[in-house]
Length: 408
Length: 70
Image (cartoon, rainbow over all chains, first blue to last red):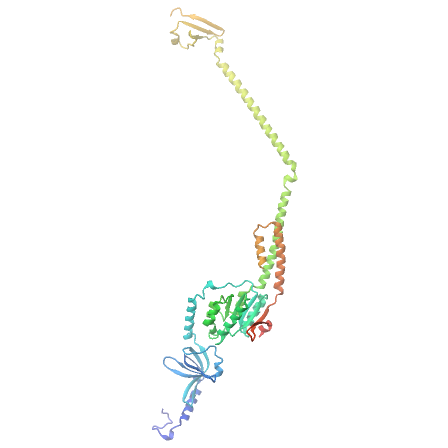
């Protein structure tokens, strides 16, 4: 390395010590604003947690790697358990450790890089749980309508509990809430949550159990993607509500629970009826009962009134009168019919008699006509019929004459 | 509430004789009052589940106001 201050030819007079060199390197690195606070994306390898509490590992990508130190104070602040192969974003500063001539990345915080290996593990587990049918709708238990005993698995401190309780107090003060404290983030959260679920299961008295946790980053909620926890939750015997995180954060726990609420507040609303609505409903029922009884009585009264005002009751004689008149009318009709019939027949008879008289041949004889009969008393009505006879009987109106033809 | 719901259904089916429905209405009114009383006077209770040294589960009352304020 040549600068304006170094000689063209290496010279012992200008040579510096290794310590001086490293100190210089350290100073240069320390004065660089970029290296003072930098975030680096990479994959963890050779992760070692020392007895001292500090953690050492390398951060690498395909082309390079750098040694990293995570001091004890920062290890305890981690929201997940780092392991080899994790893709992370590490933030901190670059330091040069003069004694060993090593440049290290002093990591202050370590975040999961969601799209990394762990994300792939998440997807794999999700597919496995789905294949086992743990997300099936048919497995989901319906929520109780009016829950009395409500189990709440949550941190004793934190907004989740506060939000949940205030909503319940407003909506459903009939609830008996049993808090089952549990860790809701960090490496030990999955096993602690399983312990809390087991406790809730042992009590056997819950109408519904809610697992609540306020929102957080992906790694805050990562414990809810634990396989053992999810499998345990899927087999939980009581309706289970997952109220983990915010609208946008889904965990596998959300999928295995019977119902998913976006937030603890939403969970409290989903599992309970609203007291005010119930009171309104009761008022409606009262009104219905009032109008129902009034309506029934009113209807019965109207029917009674109608019956009471019926003619059969008000004027019992009118029916008799009516029948009497009807009888009279029938009598009249019968009489008039008979009378008409008689007259008609008498007339017909008269007319027959008249006709009969008109046709009577005797009456014709009275007017001077005579009837010619042959010896067998048969009427001869033509000259040709008479020609074959020589003797005849002539019938007049007052007697008969026997005649003979003189000159046949 | 459940009894009340059943009672209403019975009243609504229109098959109930007058005397019986009057009884139902009377019972309904009593139930309404009871429910309202329960709803209006109810207070949220909060207990915390802990385990004793022997592993026995214990429920301890917790002041929810205080818990909520924490």
